[in-house]
Image (cartoon, rainbow, N blue to C red; front, side, top):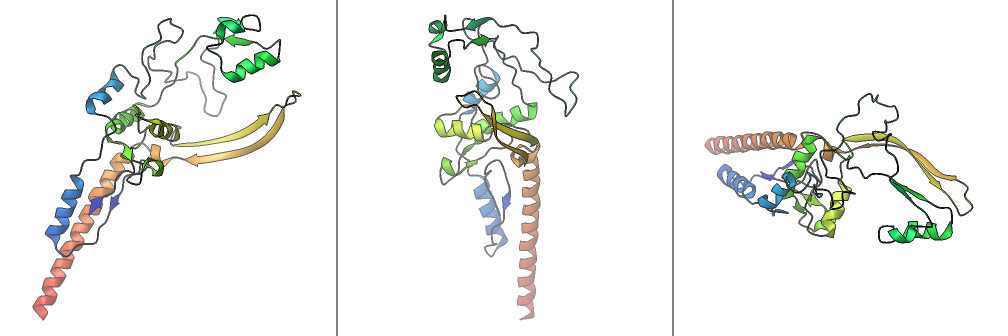
Length: 263
């Protein structure tokens, strides 16, 4: 029996046809289990996730002028929140630091996206209120633990990274990405929780200014990749499968001996 690698976060045992003798079957198991998967980053690099970098790989420190603060853990609780109710604004007391208008827009050209520049050019009264930057993002501790583990275990599928990721579960696979495809997989496997249910509505605003509803649908989705304890479950499955295969081999050996004695 060999162990299939983690494909898109799911680890499962793969049974192999017994090759005729129990020792050979066990040898194959040991050899396969002993082949190390290529690591995305080294153990030393991964330790940066507990020091210079946040658990998801961002810069933990703020910037030099203080406009971007340091990440200190994010918001991990919402006092007074009732499930199903609108989420409270944790920064309701924040006031704008300044405004960008047609008068001063040139002072911020290096910080504005092209879409915002186009809006300023088209509408003389367009303005942007600039509030303090907040780094409130947070995930459960078990997700951070998975990400730290993924950093040194996740790798591209044998067919290539376009076909999947192996060695990862319950967190982004490449917190210290080395190339564009790894960053894309981080986006595809970002933490959304183990399941979600929501209603999605899409609106468009043509040049005339009328707000038009383009579509609406209800979405219910499960994410087994983010099932807490998925790795532990996989290990249990592996042990059970190994025990069953061992039992099958013993029964086959016993049957061959019995048939040989009868002949």
